[in-house]
Length: 238
Image (tube, rainbow, N blue to C red):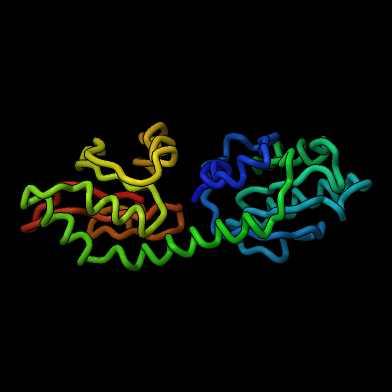
């Protein structure tokens, strides 16, 4: 999942999120979600985390606020989400400026909710994605190819994959032209709106992006080559 996709979740939208810095980096993949308040939060991270905070240990100390952002940047965090109300009634300017300089997405919630609700939902989705990376095996690719070869409906299997993984699913030809999609409509629409960039990211040079298929999760996409009788005809991305 990307930062953008997390922010589009119904639970997050109910919190009235506002991106106040780093808007150009919302397509960063989120590897995990972590709640952290300490200024030196970066020492607890390994990269790719979306960090949630109320800022209670940062209020009244601008240097701590700036260091909090710098620490996240050094740790290569994906984004930081600040719930307004407990410590800050409005987005703190020091944190906003620091995040903008670092290129770190800073999101504030105008109607904060228990962070446990978000961590549970995102972790569940991420675990299902990791499981999907394993379960999207040769058997699935073979079944999909068999459906196409037999002239059977493609949509049924795509719907099953989308339901199993809780991810939007896209099938394309080798030129990246979209042939079919499945999944929750808002998530699919988000992918299609940005399809040109996503296709380059998912199938550009790099491990798992070409050849035998079944790519890795480092960039947030699971992908597989589709074909039969020794000839590739398409690609699947989720």
